[in-house]
Length: 186
Image 1 (cartoon, rainbow, N blue to C red):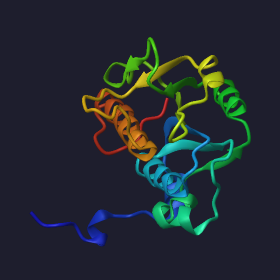
Image 2 (cartoon, helix red, strand yellow):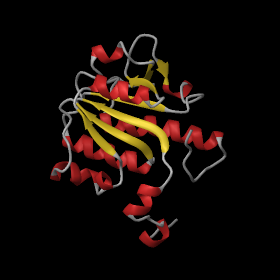
Image 3 (cartoon, rainbow, N blue to C red):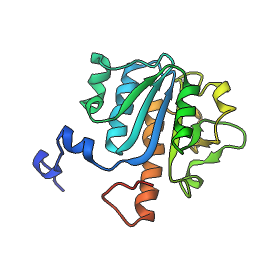
Image 4 (cartoon, rainbow, N blue to C red):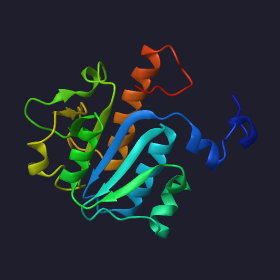
């Protein structure tokens, strides 16, 4: 086994990435405090070609060197906007025809492996590193998605959660459409 070279990876230019079809997924960050987590989420959203990223409440915004340190340029390739209130971001996503789910450990939540089906356009809200998704927001979502966990901590870093959830949705969409390498939109 040998690692691929940069040429073999076939990386696209920023302009080519901006023109690439996106997965019909909006990621909403509800009061994330760590710039490193925000940068990591940008990078993950780029990797999975998500439609948009909304940064809400006191979530740090680019440009900032600590965000760029982990984003590695993804702030230039991911369509993003700051929306002051998470509830406004939720309403905007719904107005665009997206079902909105919080990724949260909640009563009656849907286990991640059971929810990637039959949702063409989905917005996913990820909450604060300590307090999770704001309780008020939970009253307005279409449901909650929970990542199964079997360890003692029962929590994952926000950037890890984003990666796990986006992988599951994109993997399912690609399998469903027999498209192992491309994006799926509604």
